[in-house]
Image 1 (cartoon, rainbow, N blue to C red):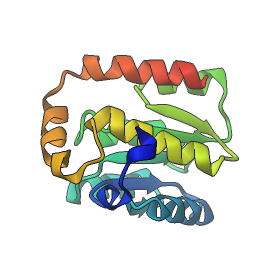
Image 2 (cartoon, helix red, strand yellow; image 1 turned 180 degrees about the vertical axis):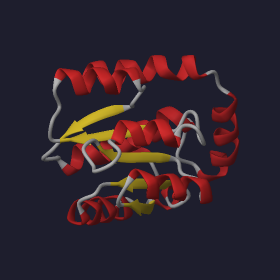
Image 3 (tube, rainbow, N blue to C red; image 1 turned 90 degrees about the vertical axis):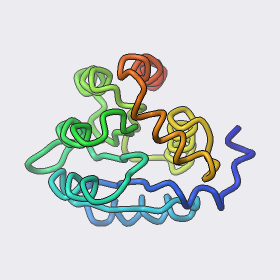
Image 4 (tube, one colour; image 1 turned 90 degrees about the horizontal axis):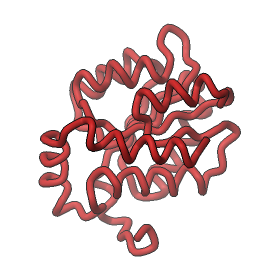
Length: 167
């Protein structure tokens, strides 16, 4: 399905990139935008929260280790606004403990650093297609509404499976 995605439809999707490293934010921003997605960048969990309060976000890319608030703590805060927000955790420390905590937080996937750009890109596409059903901008509004109405437990089962495959 990823091979048939029309990149012009991707522009309707907003990817939030949260990392305290400005170089990593820039690399991820370029990667996301080169795939046709709109990007929003934050240097901290607090800044990410402010963005999600003000704008609709369809997926969060979160660095695990940031000052003040980890990526998982940030995700918990973001989910007070968007309960089923799909998230991808990026970490240089993919220990069993981090993987377990990510699993418990229903993260779509954990990607170890240093990252492979193709892995990041394909994971973003898979998360969006699995969450919203399609990357067709005409269906985005309907899919987003459906997502808000889904039971959190239903969604988390498939997210747990993705983390198990990544581990």
